[in-house]
Length: 212
Image 1: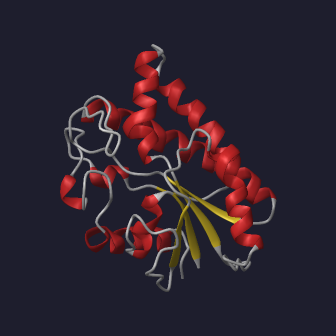
Image 2 (image 1 turned 120 degrees about the horizontal axis):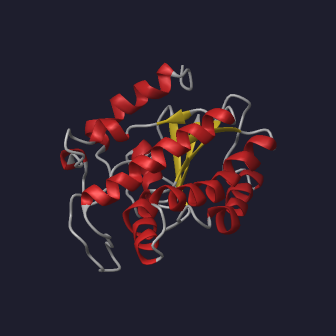
């Protein structure tokens, strides 16, 4: 079993409603948990203990063959990181790397405590234009956000590799030749469509022998 834990995007793996806490549609491969509207930058400080509590309270029955898949980062790439890079006049790569270094402490802690961990590269950002509505915030334009998403995916792959943590990436599958997001694979402005993508993503796990 792979336990997808993070924010609402974790529920893609069970085709559960984004507002669920525990995904209502567990399947033979995945169980999903949302810890709320989490962001990667402070995940270690604010949410690692919640994962430990889920394990200790037997909400998650981890066996030696099970994995924890950390599904966080989409909103960081859609809003927080582009905003911070622009407002602070910081290099995009440095901004992204700092965030991932902070977030990746969670992966390392879990691994060092005997759990199998998978890193998730996330997905490109909506093609929608800048929007400061707190219910669906979007910073800048799609190409700028997708540059950040690509940097995120690339550095997360690298840091996962050097720490022997398997990584799953779909970002290139969801961008066209112009670097824009293929929105036909989304159910709304940010959540992926399970019916169109699950088989492809499942195969990526199988190719890495993470699912038999």
